[in-house]
Image (cartoon, rainbow, N blue to C red; front, side):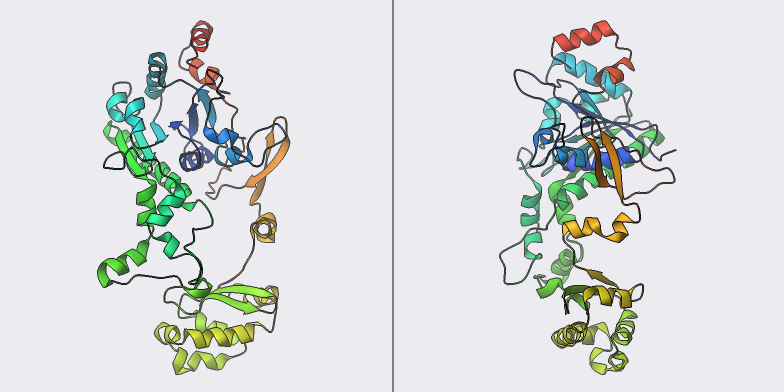
Length: 398
């Protein structure tokens, strides 16, 4: 049995942040029902990500969309219509939570808040993900990942010191905020099951980006220190912790505990470095960082990165520098079951990354749903008969 079996989650989500978080819930057995607008008046309907390229499976479906929506169900519903709201309330009556991923002022307009839904289910948890929050001067502002990185200071911490401000390489704010949304929903569900009362709970892209500044924020707020970018992706203080040159490229060493310095020194054939007073503690090594960089560059350049990784394995924290393709072909990824297969109608098999949370029962492996694929089955489970379904379809409500 998966950890979240028996939990039903409704989502009104789009693009990446919300779908990433709800996918984590679906991977752990929650029934995640993705509510999407039906095709109407010549428009295709559905999550905008369904038409995002540039790569498509043989059946014409977006690879981007599949990356964020496995193991979910899709139900089409016009939330802007009176009948659509009636259907939503029926769904809410049989669900634990409703997750939204919308501009801050939209949940209220669409009736997705606890105020609107508590009559249908007093225990419903309404978890909202927005750019800047549902209240305040930016509630109606659109916002996206890279904007948050820029305003929260991330661009000033990423890349080399002499380069233009640089974003993080992935949409990590989206994905972290999506996970925070899932966390928030589960917190709300636990409270609702204990108290009998649901409620609203909020996360925003901006707040997650800001909170992840972590210790650089504490350093500024309490010591006035403004952390800047450091050459070779070095740690702000711990040494050695940065990129170093090898015979064929680079290696990243991360000796973030005192015990690793003598281990590294011995592995490099220089055990005397461990007792050298210039390098005795992190404080001395930080002050000697340029010298240590030159010493390690010279010593590590005697072998290839692969050779050093064999020497260091399990003793010195070290990593190769891989591109995305090399990361996917890494034996530690391929040989340890971290790549898995999904069967997709009209395409065949496609590969994806195994969910990172591993329960005793393996996560299911279902492809992202087709638009409205589960509408009839889900509504039939609520007692809707063929006549009622046909009427809703004729009215373009589903």
